Length: 155
Image: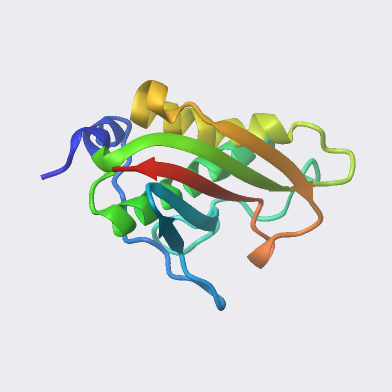
């Protein structure tokens, strides 16, 4: 039976899929004490297809970028569930770090990352409010438009 957080996600049409496996020499998450660090998640959908490919400000719209960031957040939550078994064990979303595949003059990276931040608040309420960094980058794996990493406090 799904917990409260997964029920909130389901009300928004989101069903968590199996957590993506790493594509290189790293682990998807590390827990130390009550902190859970989730490796960067690119914007793959459950079928393994990129939600948005290419650069923001050069072919990828702000709306598509925000949808990609939301997809990254879903992948983060799938990793959290794989790590602790139940999203209701999240005490707080501590921090998100977002990487936006950007054209040199694209300045709206923070608006793109709102796609991930808004999902965390929708899922966890005030516990989903977090510190955040958004960085524009020259490229991302598979030419993904967005990648997001996260730190969660868990029980």
